[in-house]
Image (cartoon, rainbow, N blue to C red; front, side, top):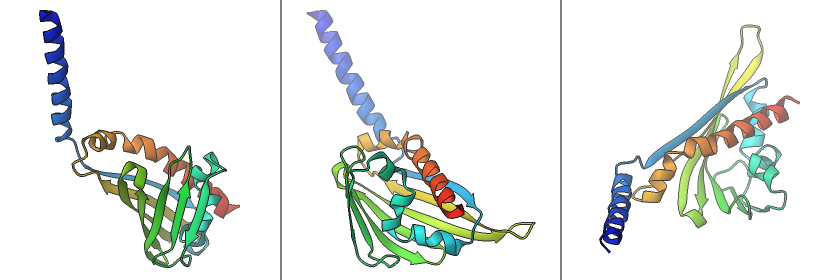
Length: 179
C-alpha cells in the first residue's frame, strides 16, 4: 500500500510540475522561410494575393486532393477569404487583411484547434549583378497561444512542424513562376 501511495504522489507531482513548467514556456511563435525566384514581383503576386491560386503551389492541397474549398470576396482585396475542410489537413479559414503590390497579410484561423495566427508574404524585387530581375519571397506566420499550456509545448516544435511545409510551398511557387 505504501508503494502505491508513493507512486500516486509521484505521478501527481510530475503532472503538476509539467503543467507549472508550461507557464514558463514561450507563448509567441514565428515561422519564416524565404526563397529567391527568377522573376519580377509582378509575376509572383497574382499567385499569392488570390487564395484560389494557392492550390497551384500550396502543399496542403497536394496532400488532400479531396479537400473541400470555398472562396468569398474579390481576389487581391481586403476581405478575400478561403475556407477549407479536410480530414487529413484540418479545417480553417484565411482572410486577406492587407494587400499591396509587394506584400499581403492574412489571418489564419483553425477553429478545431482554437488557434489563430497572422501570416504574411513579402516580395522584395531586386536586380542581380548580371542585370537579372529576381524576387525574394518571404513567407512568415506568427501567433500567440497565450495561456494555453498545451499550446506552449506545441510552440517548442512549431518551426519544425510548419517550416518544411513553407519550404516546399515556396519551392512549388518558384517552380510555378519560373516555368
